[in-house]
Length: 111
Image 1 (cartoon, helix red, strand yellow):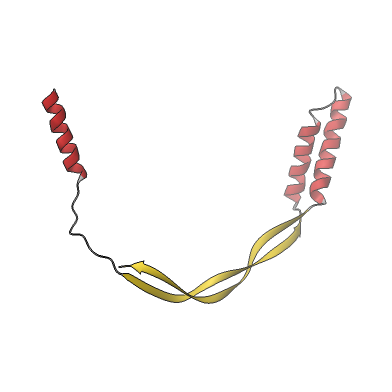
Image 2 (tube, rainbow, N blue to C red; image 1 turned 60 degrees about the vertical axis):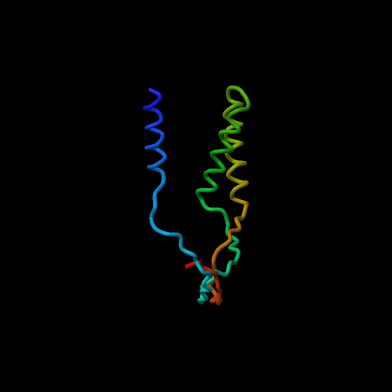
């Protein structure tokens, strides 16, 4: 059993060593080129219909957690109205690409 373990270990270690060729010294090469770099702007937009509906749904779910009987229905309705209203009155700011500029950039690669 011990000999089998040693044989298995030797085969496993030998299989892990793969020789693809001799070592090669890589030399740094500077590569320069024109690169398009994005220019960002801010888009200020009103909330979408989907966001308003989602706000109303979340508000309705939260409002449903309070009250009993007809009070529970009233709290659900109130939560939906407040959630939808808060989303309808909010504005969203998004970072968007408005243009591109060309810059000359250099990098180093090893070949």
